[in-house]
Amino acid sequence: MSSEQPMATAHSSRSAASIGLSTSHLPSGSYSWDPLCSSTREEPTPQCLLRARRDIMDIFAAPPAGVFIAPEENDITRIEALVVGPPETPYEGGFFHFLVKCPPEYPNQPPRVRIMTTGGGQVSLNPNFHPDGKVCLSILGTSPGPAWTPALSIESVLVSIQSIMAENPYYNHPQFRVELTPDDVCRYNAIVQHETVRVAVCDAVQACLDDEAAVGSVVSSCTPPPAALREVIFETFAESYDRYNA
Image 1 (tube, rainbow, N blue to C red):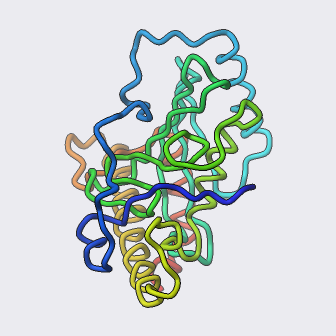
Image 2: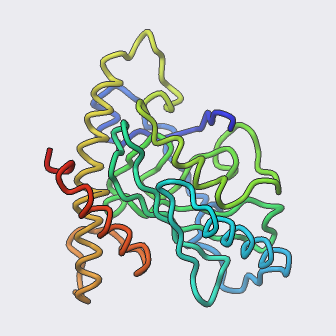
């Protein structure tokens, strides 16, 4: 897989300032990337439906490690996904919730993707994840680099997202200069690790518990995923509980 070189944002404007990063590249007002802004009048083509179904079945048949999906029952072009943070990274054990929408032109056009794990729009856990939910990947058309092709798939997108949750995510930032920022890499990792536990573990689990109990307001400001993905969160959290407490 080719290495992504995205136009990205810092962890948050506050955290970015604390490690000397400009926030002038924060996202503009265009939300064509956003699955939540998709028109209800959009009708998927037969090709789109066929390809979305095939992509979904391929993932169910051989799911990549740490990647889980739950397509909507009444609209298979709308898929919720869970990416578990890879081991040996600041994201380890975190539960990262994404919304994926295949546009009518899919697979000739890329899917629209939003990260839902943003602490209510206050936190960005990777230079490629904006607080407003934008995911910056060239194959999504949201940053410079290799473009989308119909040979790619929903799995390709989710695995690419998982791959940027790397050991040193600060390297993804367009302002990164190895000779200028050695300490910033460590500080950024510490911030990401802390916020992963706070937002992508504690808030994520709490949101699932609140949703299971049908509580009216979710204190965590975290959008809970559907039932199938909540089960994954509960099981993984129980299995990894000792590590979270370490």
